[in-house]
Each structure stands twice: as C-alpha cells, then as structure tokens.
Length: 249
Image (cartoon, rainbow, N blue to C red; front, side, top):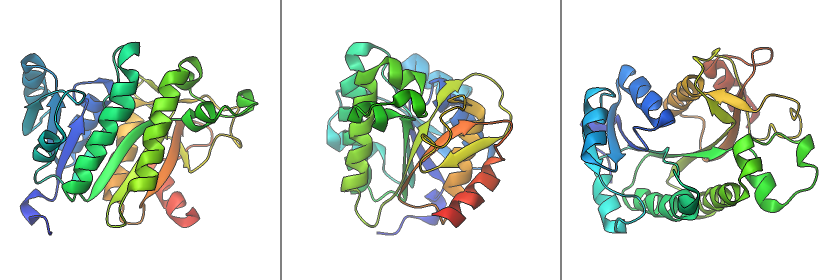
C-alpha cells in the first residue's frame, strides 16, 4: 500500500514532551516535517501544540492502550520515533519493553516507512552479563540500572528479529543524554564499545536530534543498529558521520 505523497513527511513521536522528544520535534518541524505526538494528558497536549509545533497530538497511554488504538494513531504516518521513557523504576518493563513492542507491532501493521527506536549504549553488554564492562563503552543509565538495560535490549532484539523485510528500522544506542547545546561533533558506528571505551559516554540532545533527522533523510542507512556519542576531538558533523557509516556498512 502506497502512502499519499501529501503525508510523506508525517512523523509520529512518543515522549514528545520529554527531554529528547521535545528537542527532536522542534528540529523536525524546522526541517519541514509534520509531527504527530503522543502525550499522557491535556496539559501536555497544549504544550506540544503551542511550543513544539505538533500538527496533531494524541492523548493516550502506551502501557494501557489497546494495540488497535496504536494502529489508529499511526494512520498516514511514514515515520515512527519511539522516544518515550519510564518515569518510575516500577514502569521500566512496561514502558521500555512491553509498550515498545506493541508500538513496533502497530508500526508493522500500519506499513510505516521507517521505525526509529531510541535505545541506550551498552544495554547489550549489561543484559548479556559480559565481564570486563569497565573496558567497554557503557552509559551510566545502563550500568546503574540493569533492569532498564535488560528491558531495552529485549526490545532491540525483538525489533531486529521480527522486522519484516519491507520495514526499515534504525535502533539508536546513545550515550547518556546531556542538556548542553552540543558541539555538532559525534562518533557513530555499529559498535563503539570496545574500541573507544575510554571516551566519555554521553551525547547532547541537540546533537542526537540532528543525527536522527539526518538519518531520516538517508536512503542508504537501512535496518541497522548504531551507537552514538559526542567527541570534540574525534567526532564529525552528523551528515559526515552518516557518509562514513554508509561507506562502512
């Protein structure tokens, strides 16, 4: 089923009023995309419409909704970005894996063009119980919260294993997010962990948003998992980083 060309830039974002989702939404709107957000309450809906530029906002709950509701939410969307995160420790399994799994399944049924899952650098290392993690690049979020790491890794694996051949996906395992304005220099690779374990495992939300938007425009970056961090010394602009990745994979 072909999408209407009038809706070819419609992006559905979970966690649209969150620390990353809000930055990402504004960047997408600046680049000419239309954003459709998911929020938990009416106050957040007003915020998403007025301050972030969403053309449409759904009030709903990722955990409690029916799978059929999610399919309705994704009507006419070509891109889905799962940027939602659990706000409480007790929600981790439900939000990071179960709700994420439901959203991915809905995206498959909705025939979206690209599915982007925000993950965490080192979740695979923590989840697998690998030894010597101090010699690998692992974000603080994963190292301090194994439950989060394991839930996120389960979702990553589900997407990798279950994605149909006609669905493009990108799993972004990023370092700890910072509020800094960013240096516009990032390092991106399928596996940064072992080679660059001495690096500071973080990335600014702005630089990460710039990378995601650049990745959405790329037709060569398909069905892959990438790790992303900032590096003023060894990093390059997101567009250049994508060129290097396209050559390497």
